Every structure is written in structure tokens, then in C-alpha cells.
Image 1: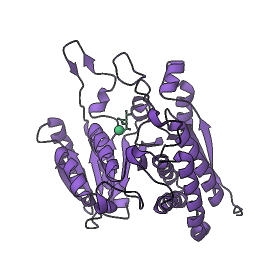
Image 2 (image 1 turned 90 degrees about the vertical axis):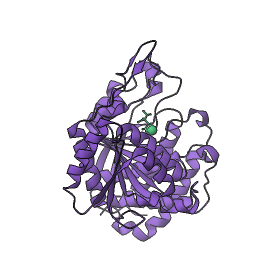
Image 3 (image 1 turned 30 degrees about the vertical axis):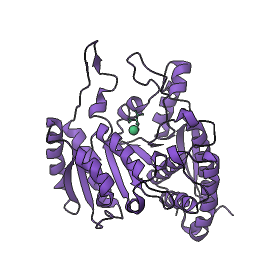
Image 4 (image 1 turned 60 degrees about the vertical axis):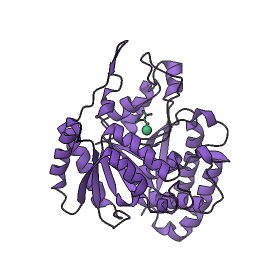
Length: 375
Ligand code: IPM
Ligand code: MN
């Protein structure tokens, strides 16, 4: 295939392969991205690879070495594998290899965008109902209960973590969710309506009553998007019994963490779920699952969540056609049935096999679309 003769944009990208299965799913994803770059021929991805996470903590005493932080400052965009290993802990017994405090809070990446979408060919525990799932969780990423990260107090007899919500934080995340709902082409699968659901617990906690009041004020700026508020316990139930009702969900940090894993399970497992962490000037993209050290190096890991995160990254970079093509390639690869997911989220043949299936599918999908790719 000939590369079109036109100037290509170069996008610098920090790559953090991560721990456990991170390096093998990152290898597979970078191969797919190079292949896609070749197919499209209109942009170049310039990868700068840095170690960060638990392995880096063990080696250097720092989960995010200065060179990696500087690279993120410069590149502004990162693709990141899962980090952390259960046995690598701080003195307070929390995990030492995590980067959330450094990247999400440190770079003020306040919007954690987590699409929960059914991929044809991937079985859902909800059966046919699973086919209708297509919503996005917008998780507030810089405050809430996790702002207490590393700041909790513990004595022999008691421990405390604080949940903090600010007006600025509630306002900007609510606005982000409404803007996303207005931009999204598809409404909620149930009725086609654009709808933002605030998930909260204002019947018990004053912090959530505060969030709700601010959310309702922001809702007034978006008359074309419906809105509603739902208690988190009811939402957990509805995400299983009636997931097609949702288009965009906005919620506090820990609630979003928990509900996105629940949502992931309903579409066949966390291994299929991508995410974006977005701020004003920087963003990074990662799958929502962990580093799964028990299956690392055994050709059993599913790279789909990371490949779809790369698609979200391309979209963020303005390479919309390439992003869409990659998403279609992933769907086609899974719908052909050559790759299969088994109990525990394992994929026989692992990241390498999935990458090959995606590249084969990409070639097929691209045949019909190449002239428009990246233009
Ligand atoms: C996630 C993860 C992280 C989080 C952990 C690893 C700190 O579970 O991205 O959902 O809790 O945010
Ligand atoms: Mn999580």
C-alpha cells in the first residue's frame, strides 16, 4: 500500500509499559499502532518509553522517576499500561507502585472518562441484554475520597480518610459530563435520549448533597440534555438490570472506580475497557484493569483495553478517522471468533494473538475507508 504524499503530523507520546502484564500488552498495542500509522500514512507517533510503577519503585525508590515526569510534562500525552504489584507496599501498607497521585492529582487530570461498551463477539454475563450496553462513566479524578490518598491517619485503634468535594471540582466535572453527552452521537440505547446521571449518596452524606446542588445548577446550562440523580446503591443495581438506560454517568472518585469495574464485568470483563485521564493541557490513556502478575509472561493477557485506550488517545490528538478505524478493527477482530476470552479474563494466545487478529481486521476495514483516513 502506498503512503499518501502529504505532510504528516508528529505526535510525541510518553509510553509507560507498567508492571505485570503491562509490557506484553504494551508491545502488542505499539505494534498495532505502527501498523495503523502505516495504513493511514498521515501521522507519526513518536514514542518515548520510560519505566514507572512498582518495578521502578523497587529499583530506584520512586514510582515515577523524574525523567518520566519530565517526559510527560513535555509530550503532554501518555499511553500507560497497568502499574503496581500487590507485594510492593508503603510503610502504611498501601501500594507503593501506583501513579494516580502523581499523574492524576499532580497534573490536575480531573476527568477520568471510562466508556463501557459491548463489543460484538464478546459474551456478557447479562446475556442478550449485554448487547445494548453503551455508556460512559465520567469519574471525578482529583478529589473525593481518594484525595486522602497517602494522607489518611492510622493509630493502633482507629484509622480515618477524608472525602472532600469542592465547588470548582463538582462544577467542572459536571460540565465535562454534559459537554460529552451533547457531543456523543448516540443517546442512551433505551430511548436515544441524551442523558447525564449523577450518581451520589445525598440521602446520607452532606458532601453529596453539595455535589447534587451544583450538578443541578450546571444542568440548567444544557437544556438539550436530560439529567437525573441516582443513589449509588440503586445505580449499582440498575447497571445490571437496566444498563441500556444510561448514556453518561458522572460521579465521585471512589464511586466511579467501583462502578467502572462493575460496568466492565457486564461487557465481558475489565480487559475490554479503556479509559482517558484528561485535564486542561495533559492527558493519559490506560486500560482500567490491574497488572495481573499471576498471568504475566504466559501469553494469556488481553490487550484490548489498552488498544482501545490508544484509540481514545488518537481521538484526543485529533486523529479521529484513525481512532474510529482502530475501534472498528477491534470490534471486527472479536466478532470473527478467532480469539476467545475465558474464565478469569484470560485469552489463550494472549496479547500477541489479539494484536495479529486486530491487524488483520484493520486491513479489511481499511480497504473501504482508506481514502478518508486522517483527512
Ligand atoms: C483504577 C485503579 C486505580 C484507582 C488504583 C490502581 C489506584 O483501580 O484506575 O481504577 O483506584 O484509581
Ligand atoms: Mn479501579
